[in-house]
Amino acid sequence: MALQKTLSLLLLSLLTLLGLGLVQPSYGQATNKKFKWQHVDSTETGGNNFYCDTMMQSRGMTRPTCKQLNTFIHENIETINNICNAPNIRCKNGRMNCHVGEVRVTGCKDTGSSPPPKCSYQATAGKKNVTIACDGNPLLPVHFDGYILP
Ligand SMILES: *[C@@H]1O[C@H](CO)[C@@H](O)[C@H](O)[C@H]1NC(C)=O
Image (cartoon, rainbow, N blue to C red; front, side, top):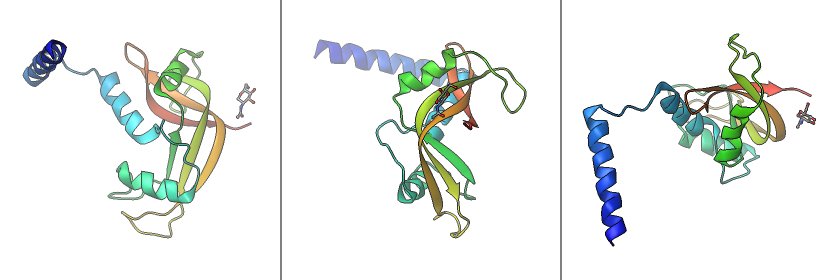
C-alpha cells in the first residue's frame, strides 16, 4: 500500500514536470516510440495476409493512404534495441548510423486491390537480416531502413 502511494506520487511528479515542459522526451525517444508503434510486435509471430491487414489498420498506417510497405519485427524489445550495438554501416540516406540484425519479421506489401482505410496486404514472413537506424542517448532504433538480401 505504501509502495503504491509512493509510486503514484512519483508518477504524478513526473507528469507535472512533463506538463511544465521541464523534462522533455528527446528527439531519439519520440522517434523510437514511433518506430516501435510501426515496426515492433513482440507478442505475435504474424506471418499471413490477415495479420498484415489487421495490424496495418490498427497501427494507423492505412489512412489517409495505404502505406505501401511495412515490416513488423517479432522479437523482444531488448533484442531489437541490442541491434544498435552492432557495427555501424551506411544507411540508404548516406548517414552512418545503421546496424544489421537477424530477426523474425512479417513484411506487408500493399496489393492495391482495396482502397484505404481497408487496405489489402500481401505478407512475407521469416528470418531476415534487417537494417535499422539508431539515434539518441541511450542509442535506440528510430528508423527501419530495409532488408539485407542473401
Ligand atoms: C544474416 O547474415 C549472416 C551473416 O552474413 C548470415 O550468416 C545469415 O545466414 C543471414 N541470415 C539470413 C536470414 O539471411
